[in-house]
Structures are given as C-alpha cells and as structure tokens.
Length: 250
Image (cartoon, rainbow, N blue to C red; front, side, top):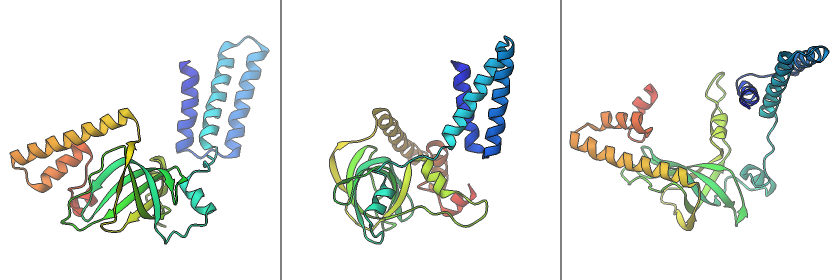
C-alpha cells in the first residue's frame, strides 16, 4: 500500500507547486498507456506497476487541481444569495478556532461559523479584528468558546504587487473565507457549549500555560520587554509584544 499512497500523495503535492496544462496531462496519460501496453504485450511486471503508479500520480494531481465546490452554507455564498450589504454589521455565531492575538491597539482571532444573520446556518472561518485602546487589556477568549457578536464582513484582497504576498491563498489554506472588524467596545456574548476538538483544546491550553509560565520566568529574570517579547515569539509563536520594527525585520 505504501507505493500507491506515495504516488497519489506525490500527485497532490506536485499539483500544489506546479501548473499542469492540458498538454502536460495528456503526455503523462500517454506515457502511462504506453507502459501499460508494453506490459500487456509480454509479462513485464515492472512496466505494469510503473503504469499503475503513474496513473495514480495523475489521479492525485487531478484531484488536487479540480475546482472545489463551496457548500451551500459557505459564508460568501450565503451573503451573495441573500444580497447582504457588507457595509452593515452582520450578526455571527460560532466558536473560537484560534484564540486572540494581542497587537498594539487591536486583538485578532479566528471564528468558525455556526450561523449568520438571524440564525441562518453558516460555515467557514472568519478572521476577526477587534479594535481597542492601547491601554486596554487584551481580549481573552479560549479555544472552542462559543460566542455571538456583530461585525462588518469583508472578502480578503491581494495587493496588486507582482510576486507579492498572496493573502487570499494564505487565509484559504487556514480555512478563512472572510475577514471582519468589530467596533471598539462592541460586546462579545458568550454562549453555552463548546466547539472544536478535544486534542486541539489540549494543545491550546498547554500553549497558554507555557505562555503564563514564560511570563513569570522572564519577569523573575528581569528581562527587558523587547528581548522577552522576541524570545516569546521564537518559542511560542506569539508576536503580540513585538514592535513594528522587529516585525518588519523578521
């Protein structure tokens, strides 16, 4: 089973980093057919195996390149069907997919949607930005917590710089379909129940415990804020305490 799985996985992997034209696909298919025909003319096991593996490679590449159909509950499709004005705040319900990251004057977290508008079933991820005053405490919501809030939704956009950062693809790979902003001091209403998986919940709890432990150790060691924030970012991936200059440098 290892060889067929490797062939399919190789096709999927190749399709993510290469653009196969129709001609490329036909040439691969022709090569597989020739190998198969050669294997049939005489008992050549190696040729038959190679033809099968090449066919599985093509199947993996085709599956990875095939356009993915959005489910009916996808938030983008839902808003388009209901002709929602994106200038108006939309009521969202869901659970915290990624806990808040504290920046200078805002907090950012990901929400896995359960419903939108007036309880219409919705799915997909939304990256939320919550504005606050710099002196206000950062937002604390744990992974899996269910919440309800009002936010203004936006479709992600790329800047028109050739070869620039593909923000749309970056968010899509992380399950984020739209971005959203909340007004300063807008309420985030906690709901009953929890979402997410048990394993991910344990991972995030461990990460939070490590972050608290690191904060205590760095305070006792007398580390200055900037070196402590840099070390925290390197060890835990938490960039919340980094200055803009440091973020730009790294």
